[in-house]
Amino acid sequence: MDIKGIEIICCIALFSLMLVGSADATFGYKILLEGGESIITENEDGSMILTIQNVVPYGVIFDDPEYITLLETVLPDTNTTMNAGVVLSNPDGDHTSLVQVSQLDYSAETKNLTFIIHPLEFYEGSILADLKERSESLNPDIVRNAHVTRIYLEKGLPVSENFGDINRCMDDCERYHEKPTRFFCEMNCAK
Image (tube, rainbow, N blue to C red):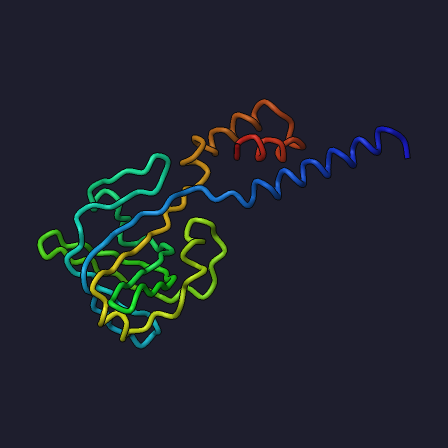
């Protein structure tokens, strides 16, 4: 095998490692919402309706830097499904469950936050990893006895929110480079 063949193999190996390393990167942050007691209703399809009462009208954004903002500014639209960690606190301690939440509805008048939850059987992200280790099944009896309810929403950011408009980057890259280099455009635009 000549030197050029070895160089090509080394380049392919290097680019493969770069892709694997960048695929694990999770972009986003955690949002903490907190309230008092909760009410849970089980649906026939396995989902549940969770209502958190007396919700604090502010959310904490765990980003760099960490900051506090009005609750209405951090809630996603009602069509969004997000991963979340629900922490229920009672005199016996904290009970944590990982769930998917959707159809969030906040009433500033009653200070209630209601949403549909589904148990999250599998989670491989990094934003809620600290909650995953202590996660257990959501028990309606624990919900009824909880005095404080906290929910940590996972807000993942697509590449375009992190690094500008990826579509525009791809268009510019492909316009100035030949088609065989599309692979390099994708790598450069995802940075």
